[in-house]
Image (tube, rainbow, N blue to C red; front, side):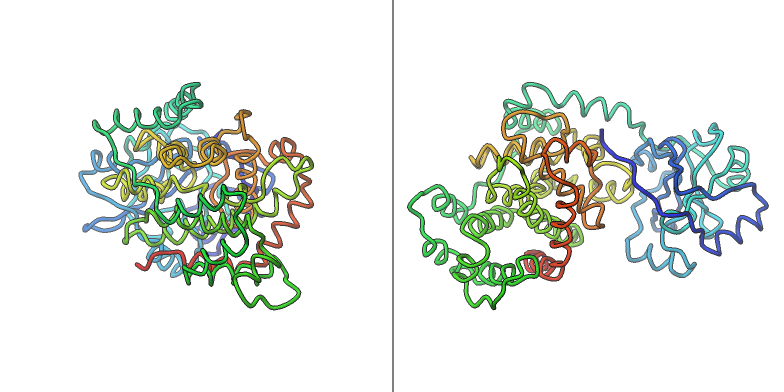
Length: 463
């Protein structure tokens, strides 16, 4: 399963939308909060542009919008309108989300021809949770002055390819399997970056039973930025320290503990080995923000396991690095990375795995596990990166990918994470974690938003 239904607030249409529908004299109704359309009937809207101008594209939710396909159809090299420009354009109309109503924006429109055959269609009305339901004939009337074409890649073949990629060979030999897929895709071997020297020193301390607090304190203090982050995190509302944290040693001994600090240092050393392109600063900031939120939540969730079957430090590290495959994609596929970012922006209704499968033939989970194997990292980390999006995985160290999936699901529900790939109920049941207590941990993390966002800001490379 690649997506889960999202709960929607009561449908409240913007005034400008109601006026437009009344002026056009179309038969319509607003969706009830308890109604949920299937992906086929739910229209997706994307705003693209080139030197000629903007274009609104409409396609069904069970398809992926592909820029190469648009170019073949229109002869134009279109790309997504920037987030800032789109927000400004919508705000001028009193809207907060992109409506599937070209007349509302006064824009030319191109829509998928397959939509003409549907008996009922759901259109976003220009605000979150606002859905206009039109009959097929009413939609055709709405589109009379627009152009249709063969738009969108059906998802079924991509989903089938995704299922085939999770084979026994992939489970047992993630590195060789991934290398083979990359070579087949690009016609040649790919060079992964070597493991950073700083990380090797941290791993040495991490695995040495004789390592002391003084050793890790000295290590952290050699990196002023890391030292500031450790003290700041220990002072955050998440830990609610009864007194002021005055030093790195204070932070380690009184609040964070050895495992969290050394894994924070290791995660940051590994993450900084690669960076996103400078022109993708938005994604870089999102990467680090998601990383620190996930790590913080993992730190709390692992303590709720009834059988204490996972290590706190490893859980924290898995949360911090769970999405490092995203950085690897930028390193391994530089010619394709900008295109990947554009397609993710155009297809927010889809799991990133389907978009990556379509464009690259591989996902960030697979390539991240490949890197962990290349760097000779612990097996728990490799397993977590590879199977965090596989709800069926029950192999060795299954607790860690399940915890990461749950952490990201909870963060998504709070508006701080990506679209989840598993149902919450199955994860709570599998891990034996109480929903109420997990919610309390989540609230503690959210109360520490300021500290976490500052940490993410410090980690984000300057544009």
